[in-house]
Image 1 (cartoon, rainbow, N blue to C red):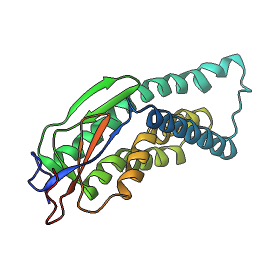
Image 2: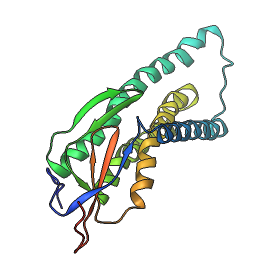
Image 3: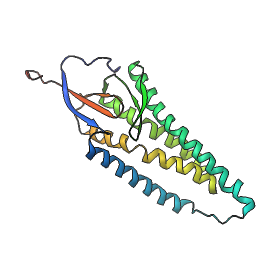
Image 4: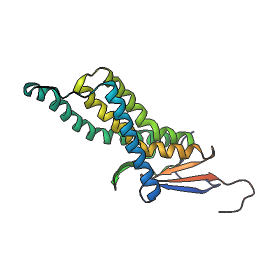
Length: 199
């Protein structure tokens, strides 16, 4: 089923999830992000211990170049993450998404209304797709190059804390919900039961 470009008749607002203005949600998501980053860092240390024991001749090739790639890759990744959200939004709705910056968030948003399954796919697509790409890259990298790629993987997972949060919230709602995600604010609509005259 395609997403809707306008809210169909027979729906009313159920709730609003505002990642920016709802301070409880804002801090919950940011604490989750920090916890995910810390957990993944520990996993990385156990898998490939950090070793800075290089002489001056090896420093540039051994660490500085990989970490220069890391910073460039991390910057690029932020936009690639949102691009995947936007691609799936467009694929489901054929409504052009919009992108922007707000507070600490880079976001993709849409004026379309997505069903529950579509929205969960939109939310999780970047962390799954880029997670697999980065996992494969990590398997072929060693030493500093592993860490250059793995730090981007940490950014991938910890940066998806908001996506995990909204997925958890959506999973608790009925199957018939529709979701409009304008970037950092998600409005959830539910079908009005037969005989219910409330707006």
